[in-house]
Image 1 (cartoon, rainbow, N blue to C red):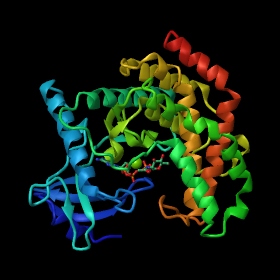
Image 2 (cartoon, helix red, strand yellow):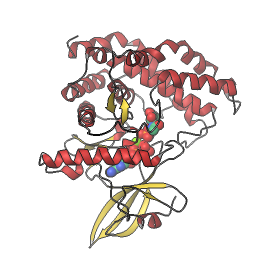
Image 3 (tube, helix red, strand yellow):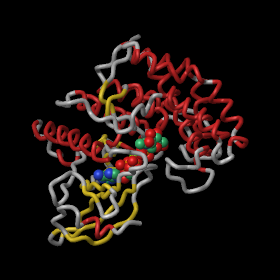
Length: 366
Ligand code: ADP
Ligand code: GN1
Ligand code: MG
């Protein structure tokens, strides 16, 4: 735990620090919820240390976040939205006016007002939540498409280049730096047998059939906060990977996280299956806002769900073989457990791919 009182002094808080505690279930950054006293009123902020092992250039990352959030707020204010400051993240300035602050150890921190009366779900409870989440991510893509100025920085180059992810796994297998390859033969065999899938979207992007768009790239369902009362998608968060990408990666990651019967950290995989009604709700919600998709994108939505899940299985396995250097873990086997969970979900998606594609094609009139 960092000294949050010291960190709070780096920002223009205009309120007195009371207390802070670790918050949320993200795998990457160090997130804290902090209470402040503002002239007798108790208010909350989020302080986050950016993981600079994962994001090699946190300043570039914050330039992106600052641009996207300012653009979003300007549009909301222009529309006269009554809840403009709850509908987008906003960076609270540091004492030097920058949207981030650097502590004495070189860590880069940012502060966001806490979005109240809304939350992100690791496991969705209703199809209405899936509908609203997908609609909100589609709206976010639309908003990002109108971002003026230069191309955003690539905060993690080739983030969803699944073929590269596959090659990195082969490298990790070859190096076997933690002598773990012998434990994971079945997982390696499974992933190798799906090698051709890894190139499918990247090849369509390279040939121009699928366009580059500004996308979120981490549309895990807990990265959109849903209103506690109405379930409406209130605010898309975790903007660290908002950068050029493909709409398919965003839809695919929604499928990966909203459609499985079991959560990503579940290890009892005998019951792994998919929730078809959740898939349908994602399609319904996404099609409401993502009105810009071309036919090549529309016809790969179901496949994207499988691809993003396969990609995650590759990434978890690679991290396990490299000694758990990327994703946060709570138990020594967590990365390989997550890999097995993702493989089980890939299998479930494959079993029902014809129906998934039929539903998607029907909705998009293909
Ligand atoms: P990570 O990259 O580690 O996933 P996130 O930016 O997603 O970090 O933040 C972790 C969690 O903190 C989120 O899942 C969410 O629950 C919570 N969170 C982040 N920002 C806010 C905010 N402005 N208001 C309320 N909760 C937030
Ligand atoms: C990470 O940051 P978080 O927990 O929302 C990861 C995603 C993975 C996800 C797997 C920057 O997401 O790419 O899909 O874990 N984020 C980054 O749960 O690598
Ligand atoms: Mg997150």
